[in-house]
Length: 456
Image (cartoon, rainbow, N blue to C red; front, side):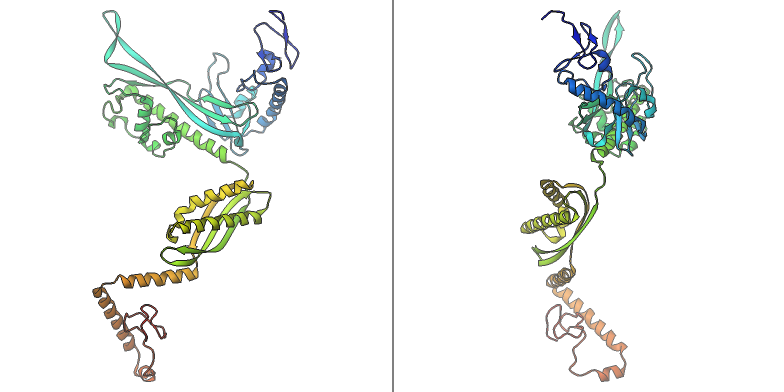
């Protein structure tokens, strides 16, 4: 093999210079063909000639997808993320500069970047998203006797760059890393209370949250109190609070930091919708009774009602059967744990997870489970009411019992007083009293008291 062997592009056949082109797994690719590929593509060594041709064909089809793109949201100043929520697709560019050293412009519509043919990605191809805040620092020094020396205490300027990293399940784009801010956010620190991981400490102040793990981005950014915190007067903070002197010098930096936090919060919420956005499945209503062994009430009947949506080739009736069987089995398992019927509502998440697991085993995709209610049936409510009365009677003290009896007697006398002489004369001598002489409960003509059981 010659040292300077001539190479040809495996796709277009053009000659490739000594230092030009890219090496493929089974050939070579010239620079002109590489320019037509996605700007997010970089794994040339693993790519084959066939996969490159497929990508080039898809890039031509991508122009048609861009023509139908309707912008609903945009994020970023340096790079840009442009979203079409109605079609459930988005695209992104790494740099909004018009040329290598050109002025960067704010992207507000897909029409501004059509010439770049940015890849249109479906929402369901998003697997994860992360916000990466990169901190760098620079020490400011003073000139003393012609030499640069540190201040005492040191003056440190912290600089922050915000990146959105979107991971994909895509044929040729594994991820997109978009720089959101054009210029670094700069926050000077002139205080003595210098701290490590200063960016997280600032987030603690802004969000009122104890941030310790930088990987838990949801705790950092998903906080509704942030907007309220950013409207506070920065001068109300004590000097050197969290190591930052609250002066005119860093007020703008703190506000810009908060601005990008808000942007990243909205990106996280939007991409979360991307991950869950799917065509709506038919709604299914389920209702069935179940006998439940309650530790206090014994066997009682419960009514279980649920509403869910699921994609399945088995049909709605089979989905109902699977859901009812799964819920029944798990509710009986909860009963074996001696859980009161009153606490079943707290087990809703457990029941949903079990249903999802059962569905997944049968290739059923549970898309929504909005409601699940478990309530006592009619006979159970009567039984529970009677048990509550008996418990109340058992818990009564002699003084409480005497007061209740006295109140019942007064109520009976008042009822008799409202009747005339004719009513009294027509009343048989051996008729059942209207109130139990023992506990004062209304008898309704029964021979035994429904509360204490006394013969009437």
